[in-house]
Amino acid sequence: MKNFIVAICIGAIIIFFERCKNDMSKSDMNNSSIMSTWELRRMQGGMSPLKDYPSGTGTILKFSDSLYERYENGNLIKSGHYKLIRDTSVEKEVGLVIPSGQFTNRIVYDNDSASEKTFIEVSNNKLTFLSGFFPSDGGSDVSYERIIKKH
Image (cartoon, rainbow, N blue to C red; front, side, top):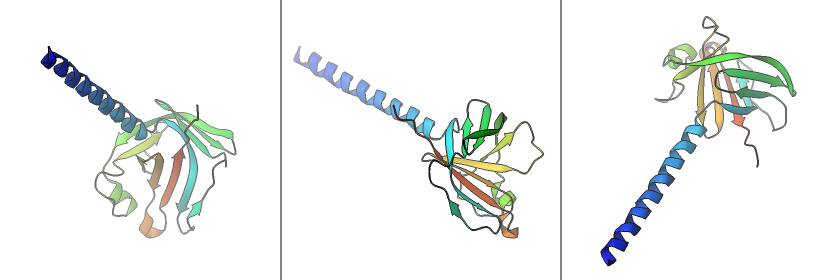
């Protein structure tokens, strides 16, 4: 009987840790998802110096499954459809050395796949866009921070 109780306790502990591990995996997936509300934090483009933005500027991007909305000063200025495409040509396109495994997707707005490629990376509640060609002062690096809603 004593061995039976020990076995049940060990089984319960294993199940508990497996569930915790699964919950953490779901959390990690949510942290790397573009589907969220994002606020502009940093922008650098061309020969312009890096500019930081405080929270509350109203420059917002919202992404759902396939729809996006772009706000400036809290006003909706554009909306439509987007899709993410696997694309590993970031180094060639932007002229920078990029660590392996980063910026391996690009975003296409409103089925306009002929426009300049914009690569994205989501990490640690930060959404970064790279586009243009940096060596000719035509590159753009724009970062947004995920807006975490307080319950």
